[in-house]
Amino acid sequence: MDPLSQVLSLLKPQSYISSGFHAGGEWSVQFGDQSQLIKCYAVVSGSCWLQIDGVPEPLTLEEGDSFVLPSGQPFRLASNLDLPPVPASEIFPPARRGGEVFINGGGDLFMVGSRFGVSGGHAGMLLAMLPPVVHLRKASDQATLRWSVERMMQELREGEPGGYLIAQHLAHMMLVQALRAHLAEGPGVGVGWFFALADKQLAKAIAALHSDPARRWTLQELGEIAGMSRSTFALRFRETAGETPMEYLSRWRMLLACDRLETSGDPVSVIAPTIGYESESAFSTAFKRVMGCSPRQYGRMRRPAAAQGDGRAATQPLAS
Figure (cartoon, rainbow, N blue to C red):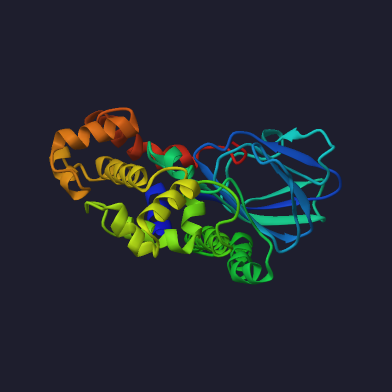
């Protein structure tokens, strides 16, 4: 499995809302903290502004554009950013799959997409690996997503048997297609794992780490895979990813361990060697350094929560 697929799989996205949003006239809506959520939408018709906390400049969304918000930051959608925003909770009803929301009767803007809930005590760490916003405007990217968007609209409106499952798979496709298209644009300006993954040479080294996390990797080996000298690779990885290759490997191992502790019920003595630790004590020390608690404490805390996660997600309001 490739690194992006692995990260998204560990997030365990559940598309518990797929909906349409219509707006008309003058309007401005403020969405609060989106913690543990990924939003993926496409503008079918019309245009509006998107302003995200922590992103310096607002984005103009035009017909055909798609955007993904993986960071969970509060954001605002508006026809005019000078208008005082209305809290989304005053406009959006409680969560309802396949619903359509209207502002001022609609007519000027129609947007469709999904909201994903993610699970796991390590979700914040994984979401931090993704960019704060992905904005797709290229005609080729729009064409890639068009079929998914149009099919989702059809499923939302017709309510045919099995429609929810189809819409869920289409939403996952939209998410992966959007992130894939963003990667294809190249590293861009910024620091983080996603920027490193967009660098074709560094991506080869990241893929190698993911393919065999238990191996005793050296900078020399990783540099050769990336087609660079040891020192050049180490410097470029740190400047692009914001951490050293070995720091990244250690963190990725802990994320894999978190998933095993949540889902498998395997003891620490079984998990440790599968991710590169010869002793249980060495693994426990590394885990506590990265995750802030021991593996056993994490397993006790997360297994009951994971079992209840889907039920909580389905009851959250649309604008939460």
